[in-house]
Length: 197
Ligand code: ATP
Ligand code: MG
Image (cartoon, rainbow, N blue to C red):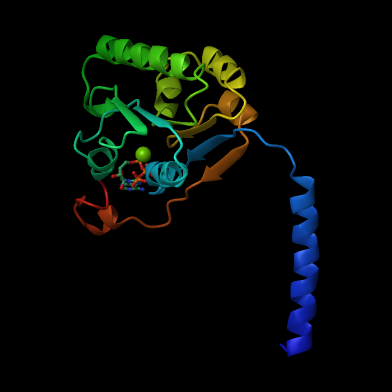
Protein backbone atom coordinates (compact mmCIF):
# COMPACT_ATOMS: atom_id res chain seq x y z
CA UNK A 1 0.00 0.00 0.00
CA UNK A 2 1.30 3.47 -0.86
CA UNK A 3 2.05 5.96 1.91
CA UNK A 4 -0.83 8.26 0.88
CA UNK A 5 -3.28 5.38 0.74
CA UNK A 6 -2.22 4.25 4.20
CA UNK A 7 -2.52 7.83 5.53
CA UNK A 8 -6.03 8.22 4.05
CA UNK A 9 -7.14 4.93 5.47
CA UNK A 10 -5.84 5.85 8.94
CA UNK A 11 -7.49 9.27 8.77
CA UNK A 12 -10.87 7.74 7.98
CA UNK A 13 -10.40 5.14 10.74
CA UNK A 14 -9.60 7.96 13.17
CA UNK A 15 -12.74 9.86 12.12
CA UNK A 16 -14.89 6.78 12.78
CA UNK A 17 -13.18 6.19 16.13
CA UNK A 18 -13.52 9.86 17.15
CA UNK A 19 -17.25 9.71 16.40
CA UNK A 20 -17.62 6.57 18.52
CA UNK A 21 -15.70 8.15 21.39
CA UNK A 22 -17.87 11.27 21.17
CA UNK A 23 -20.98 9.07 21.40
CA UNK A 24 -19.79 7.15 24.49
CA UNK A 25 -20.44 9.76 27.14
CA UNK A 26 -22.04 7.81 29.95
CA UNK A 27 -20.04 7.28 33.12
CA UNK A 28 -21.12 4.27 35.15
CA UNK A 29 -20.07 0.86 36.30
CA UNK A 30 -20.50 -2.09 33.96
CA UNK A 31 -21.50 -5.71 34.25
CA UNK A 32 -19.03 -7.91 32.39
CA UNK A 33 -19.69 -11.59 31.65
CA UNK A 34 -16.81 -13.86 30.66
CA UNK A 35 -18.09 -17.15 29.32
CA UNK A 36 -17.16 -20.03 27.02
CA UNK A 37 -15.16 -23.24 27.16
CA UNK A 38 -11.71 -21.84 26.48
CA UNK A 39 -9.02 -20.99 28.99
CA UNK A 40 -8.85 -17.37 30.08
CA UNK A 41 -12.03 -16.33 31.88
CA UNK A 42 -10.93 -16.14 35.50
CA UNK A 43 -7.47 -14.93 34.58
CA UNK A 44 -9.01 -12.15 32.48
CA UNK A 45 -11.23 -11.15 35.40
CA UNK A 46 -8.22 -10.97 37.73
CA UNK A 47 -6.25 -9.10 35.09
CA UNK A 48 -8.96 -6.45 34.90
CA UNK A 49 -9.04 -6.36 38.68
CA UNK A 50 -5.31 -5.66 38.64
CA UNK A 51 -6.00 -2.68 36.45
CA UNK A 52 -8.51 -1.34 38.97
CA UNK A 53 -6.09 -1.96 41.82
CA UNK A 54 -3.44 0.04 40.01
CA UNK A 55 -5.79 2.99 40.33
CA UNK A 56 -6.31 2.37 44.03
CA UNK A 57 -9.80 0.90 43.67
CA UNK A 58 -11.29 -1.44 46.22
CA UNK A 59 -12.03 -4.94 44.90
CA UNK A 60 -13.71 -8.01 46.31
CA UNK A 61 -13.54 -11.52 44.88
CA UNK A 62 -16.02 -14.25 45.70
CA UNK A 63 -15.14 -17.66 44.33
CA UNK A 64 -18.35 -19.66 44.14
CA UNK A 65 -16.53 -22.89 43.41
CA UNK A 66 -13.42 -23.79 45.25
CA UNK A 67 -10.71 -25.13 42.98
CA UNK A 68 -7.27 -25.26 44.50
CA UNK A 69 -7.02 -23.08 47.59
CA UNK A 70 -3.52 -21.82 47.11
CA UNK A 71 -3.79 -20.43 43.62
CA UNK A 72 -1.14 -17.93 42.54
CA UNK A 73 -3.75 -15.20 42.28
CA UNK A 74 -5.02 -15.84 45.80
CA UNK A 75 -1.50 -15.88 47.21
CA UNK A 76 -0.70 -12.67 45.38
CA UNK A 77 -3.85 -10.66 46.09
CA UNK A 78 -4.72 -11.80 49.60
CA UNK A 79 -2.21 -9.44 51.20
CA UNK A 80 -3.36 -6.39 49.25
CA UNK A 81 -5.10 -3.87 51.53
CA UNK A 82 -7.47 -3.13 48.63
CA UNK A 83 -8.61 -6.74 48.14
CA UNK A 84 -10.97 -9.00 50.06
CA UNK A 85 -10.94 -12.56 48.78
CA UNK A 86 -13.59 -15.10 49.74
CA UNK A 87 -13.45 -18.74 48.74
CA UNK A 88 -16.96 -20.00 49.38
CA UNK A 89 -17.57 -23.26 47.53
CA UNK A 90 -16.65 -26.81 48.43
CA UNK A 91 -14.38 -28.25 45.79
CA UNK A 92 -15.31 -28.81 42.18
CA UNK A 93 -18.95 -29.61 41.74
CA UNK A 94 -18.27 -32.85 39.94
CA UNK A 95 -16.17 -34.00 42.88
CA UNK A 96 -18.67 -33.17 45.57
CA UNK A 97 -21.08 -35.72 46.90
CA UNK A 98 -23.12 -33.51 49.13
CA UNK A 99 -25.60 -31.38 47.23
CA UNK A 100 -27.15 -29.92 50.39
CA UNK A 101 -23.75 -28.71 51.52
CA UNK A 102 -23.14 -27.13 48.10
CA UNK A 103 -26.47 -25.32 48.23
CA UNK A 104 -25.75 -24.04 51.73
CA UNK A 105 -22.35 -22.77 50.55
CA UNK A 106 -23.92 -21.11 47.51
CA UNK A 107 -26.52 -19.37 49.66
CA UNK A 108 -23.87 -18.14 52.06
CA UNK A 109 -21.79 -16.81 49.17
CA UNK A 110 -24.83 -15.08 47.71
CA UNK A 111 -25.73 -13.49 51.07
CA UNK A 112 -22.29 -11.90 51.10
CA UNK A 113 -22.47 -10.94 47.43
CA UNK A 114 -25.84 -9.29 47.93
CA UNK A 115 -24.47 -7.19 50.78
CA UNK A 116 -21.49 -6.10 48.70
CA UNK A 117 -23.78 -5.16 45.83
CA UNK A 118 -25.19 -2.47 48.14
CA UNK A 119 -21.81 -1.20 49.30
CA UNK A 120 -20.75 1.98 47.54
CA UNK A 121 -17.21 1.72 48.86
CA UNK A 122 -16.55 -1.35 46.68
CA UNK A 123 -15.45 -0.41 43.18
CA UNK A 124 -15.18 -3.87 41.66
CA UNK A 125 -16.72 -7.23 42.41
CA UNK A 126 -15.52 -10.45 40.80
CA UNK A 127 -17.97 -13.36 41.10
CA UNK A 128 -15.76 -16.15 39.88
CA UNK A 129 -17.54 -19.28 38.58
CA UNK A 130 -20.88 -17.88 39.71
CA UNK A 131 -22.63 -19.09 36.57
CA UNK A 132 -22.62 -22.70 37.80
CA UNK A 133 -24.86 -21.70 40.70
CA UNK A 134 -27.68 -21.14 38.23
CA UNK A 135 -26.84 -24.07 36.02
CA UNK A 136 -27.07 -26.48 38.95
CA UNK A 137 -29.99 -24.53 40.43
CA UNK A 138 -28.13 -23.83 43.66
CA UNK A 139 -29.29 -20.22 43.40
CA UNK A 140 -32.22 -18.48 41.78
CA UNK A 141 -31.21 -16.06 39.09
CA UNK A 142 -33.96 -13.44 39.52
CA UNK A 143 -32.82 -12.03 42.90
CA UNK A 144 -29.29 -11.81 41.47
CA UNK A 145 -30.55 -9.87 38.45
CA UNK A 146 -32.41 -7.46 40.72
CA UNK A 147 -29.44 -6.92 43.03
CA UNK A 148 -27.17 -6.30 40.03
CA UNK A 149 -29.60 -3.77 38.61
CA UNK A 150 -29.89 -1.93 41.92
CA UNK A 151 -26.17 -1.82 42.71
CA UNK A 152 -24.27 1.46 43.18
CA UNK A 153 -24.00 3.35 39.91
CA UNK A 154 -20.23 3.19 39.56
CA UNK A 155 -19.69 -0.35 40.76
CA UNK A 156 -18.18 -2.76 38.23
CA UNK A 157 -19.04 -6.45 38.36
CA UNK A 158 -17.36 -9.32 36.52
CA UNK A 159 -18.95 -12.77 36.44
CA UNK A 160 -17.13 -15.79 35.02
CA UNK A 161 -18.22 -19.31 34.13
CA UNK A 162 -18.47 -21.55 31.10
CA UNK A 163 -22.21 -21.17 30.66
CA UNK A 164 -24.15 -18.02 31.50
CA UNK A 165 -27.77 -17.65 32.52
CA UNK A 166 -29.71 -15.87 29.78
CA UNK A 167 -31.20 -13.55 32.39
CA UNK A 168 -27.70 -12.29 33.20
CA UNK A 169 -26.83 -11.91 29.54
CA UNK A 170 -29.95 -9.79 29.10
CA UNK A 171 -28.68 -7.16 31.56
CA UNK A 172 -24.92 -7.33 30.91
CA UNK A 173 -22.98 -4.45 29.35
CA UNK A 174 -20.07 -6.50 28.04
CA UNK A 175 -20.07 -10.19 27.18
CA UNK A 176 -16.96 -11.98 25.96
CA UNK A 177 -16.82 -15.58 24.85
CA UNK A 178 -13.52 -17.32 25.41
CA UNK A 179 -13.53 -19.97 22.74
CA UNK A 180 -11.72 -23.25 23.17
CA UNK A 181 -9.66 -23.83 20.08
CA UNK A 182 -6.93 -25.94 21.65
CA UNK A 183 -5.88 -26.71 25.20
CA UNK A 184 -2.56 -28.18 26.34
CA UNK A 185 -4.44 -30.56 28.65
CA UNK A 186 -5.73 -32.46 25.64
CA UNK A 187 -2.18 -32.72 24.38
CA UNK A 188 -1.39 -34.50 27.61
CA UNK A 189 0.17 -31.56 29.44
CA UNK A 190 -0.38 -31.61 33.17
CA UNK A 191 -1.99 -28.59 34.93
CA UNK A 192 0.87 -26.43 36.05
CA UNK A 193 1.65 -23.87 38.69
CA UNK A 194 1.61 -20.34 37.32
CA UNK A 195 -0.57 -21.31 34.35
CA UNK A 196 -3.57 -23.21 35.68
CA UNK A 197 -3.38 -22.23 39.36
P1 ATP B 1 -8.22 -19.54 33.78
O1 ATP B 1 -8.43 -19.55 35.27
O2 ATP B 1 -6.94 -20.18 33.41
O3 ATP B 1 -8.44 -18.20 33.18
P2 ATP B 1 -10.88 -20.29 33.01
O4 ATP B 1 -11.39 -19.51 34.15
O5 ATP B 1 -11.18 -19.77 31.65
O6 ATP B 1 -9.31 -20.51 33.16
P3 ATP B 1 -12.36 -22.59 33.98
O7 ATP B 1 -13.49 -23.08 33.17
O8 ATP B 1 -12.65 -21.82 35.20
O9 ATP B 1 -11.38 -21.78 33.01
O10 ATP B 1 -11.44 -23.82 34.31
C1 ATP B 1 -10.53 -23.79 35.35
C2 ATP B 1 -9.30 -24.59 35.05
O11 ATP B 1 -9.44 -25.43 33.93
C3 ATP B 1 -8.08 -23.74 34.74
O12 ATP B 1 -7.01 -24.33 35.39
C4 ATP B 1 -7.92 -23.81 33.25
O13 ATP B 1 -6.59 -23.74 32.82
C5 ATP B 1 -8.48 -25.14 32.93
N1 ATP B 1 -9.17 -25.08 31.63
C6 ATP B 1 -9.85 -24.05 31.13
N2 ATP B 1 -10.34 -24.33 29.91
C7 ATP B 1 -9.96 -25.60 29.65
C8 ATP B 1 -10.15 -26.50 28.54
N3 ATP B 1 -10.82 -26.11 27.47
N4 ATP B 1 -9.60 -27.75 28.63
C9 ATP B 1 -8.93 -28.13 29.72
N5 ATP B 1 -8.72 -27.33 30.80
C10 ATP B 1 -9.23 -26.09 30.76
MG1 MG C 1 -12.42 -19.91 35.85
